[in-house]
Length: 315
Image (tube, rainbow, N blue to C red; front, side, top):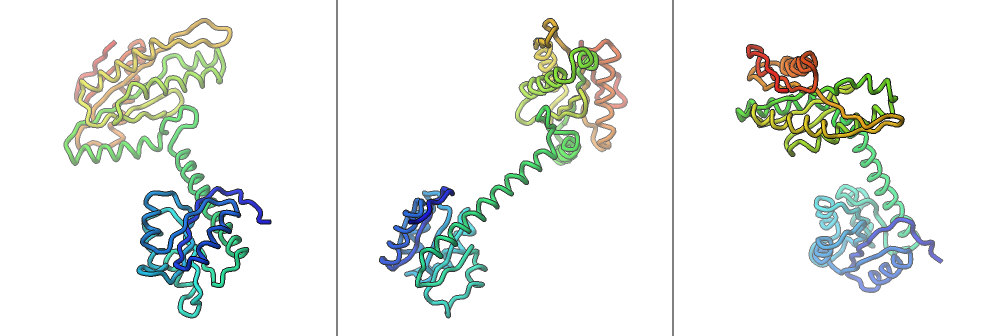
């Protein structure tokens, strides 16, 4: 009695000998796998075009294209593992098959239990590889995103800003920057606790993202500060986005435990990149504009479009 496999997978058997092909196909089915069968490499490639195949088990000697050539094509075009089998061990080596991209090599006459063990090993290694790739992708995501708000973090902000400025220089397109700070956040945090404060930060991040265009990117700069990069955006356009964010936040209501419904506001600073200046100068000017909004009473949008421009505020 064959033990049923716990890994869902679809297998393709390629062999021009009907007896061997049918026997392997039947055995694979008994082991709990879905399988296809075909007699040529050309037909195998057609099946791969329209079906998700996890492992191909192919003979080397085939009419037309041989199994090693098939393996090479599969590994270059599909996310599929290959087990090569042959009765001509003297003509073909394990190293030759592996160099073509095969995951394993089986000699004929086929011993079905050995083939099943090798198939299960290939599938296990395939799953481990995919899980490792997902884990690495997740770790990479964590490295550039803020865990609480799911916005990009300040490390990512500087990297992306550098890229956008380079693009701005190449194509002579404007790029604008917004800095934002939640008004009286410390007072809210001290009054209602950090858990409630975290809810505010998370909700503010959602509101900011909802007000942006696809080309804009939002970041949690630190604490209760946020920033937005707006590529290919004029002064008038960035003011429209800033006003939209401010209005959306003013309309939001927070209801902490033991507290009444509360509205909160945000102070915004806006600036535009000046060709040739340092990134640090650009960022500092946006930060300065934001603090200008704070100094003038909060819940305002202040603009400083260059170090020579006069400062202005839009309530």
